[in-house]
Image (cartoon, rainbow over all chains, first blue to last red; front, side, top):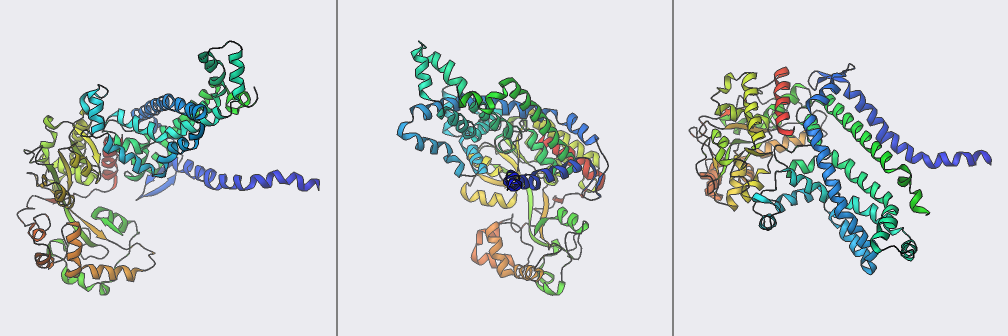
Length: 287
Length: 273
């Protein structure tokens, strides 16, 4: 009896672990081996501990690397500035419209990512009424947004906004309104109540939202491809080009690992700084 | 599968593509146009049968940029930020080499790299708006781009919606290419594939295809049929180009081995870096 009980946790873990091993660990291993290969498609790839792939990756592609983090960072901040008030409005002022509003946030996801981005090509085109309007109120001097960094950042923000809104909404929803009442009972103004009670309690949501936005955005290539000009390419575009056009698989694999490593470092520092406890939701769950 | 010339050759060399059973495709031998016979990479059509052929040149909004007549005009600062080039290396770079006066039959690796430098410079300056595949069509239609390096078939289709969009034969000449039908090794039904190839090389059927995609047909006898069902198409020089029209046009010079790697990497750095 006791023996069977002990096996149960492992059996429950098994499907998830198997999935992770087959679809993540094994491909990662193959990619790691590929990143140390040398050769071309014609001559065949051979495993030769070619660390120069990594050296080349770091020296040749610094510009797109830095640009990718700049654009992803900007998009994350803007998404936060737009997403937090939106999530707050839905959570606290939604009332009977809550579900409709949530649906409106998710609705764009019913169209594919690619089509949404291509649609923005038309919205941000030089001749579009949207751009003319922005130009007339001074927000888009020159009336030229498409094929610039602004277009790429706008596209990334738009595409990843639901990833920011939903986690923040989830953590705001969990806040017991009596805590805010208690704050007000202790003479806090509305603003103080927000800053001292609501904001810290929604911190796990903010952290989750920013991570869910920043990490995929840093590796994104679709927005830069359609909305960017010749100087707005991100590291994702480089990897795509290396893989599909140059067919230099070792270089593409090495670059992918470098990107993964840099993102992990950034995320690690961010979580340390933000406090890993709030990520686990200890503070939010019972205050 | 349908792939471009250089890719068909590469796949054949890598052993991905099989030889064709000539007895199953008699129409090809009968009807293939003379200009597409004896191509250097597959003189006897052992593994590749042309699907459609085409020209790469300038596609221009003649209402916005009437004086663009050569590839070199694309580098004119007057059109800064309103010019697109193709991500297809073997179309864009040889055309720029032509602008530089290079004889493509004698092009060296350095010629390729110099042309790529010129393109890279223009990209950095903002002269080139972006590098595109077919989606230059969107930029041209909206007017975000006034002139692009583009394909002849697209030009005809775009012209139907906007008569100001025209294919302009560059002064230096154009690039000629053909897409080819090939059969991969291990295909489950090569007989069906060969039957399709044979079917498509019957002028009656080919006429329908040409009437739809407006590219150059590899089958003789199509022009006569089109004259009855779609006279404007039959008269179009883009679908039935005369010798004179394509006098200065070339196929892309071949690239292999180390040369190819260096050139591809350099171009990739310009286009996606």
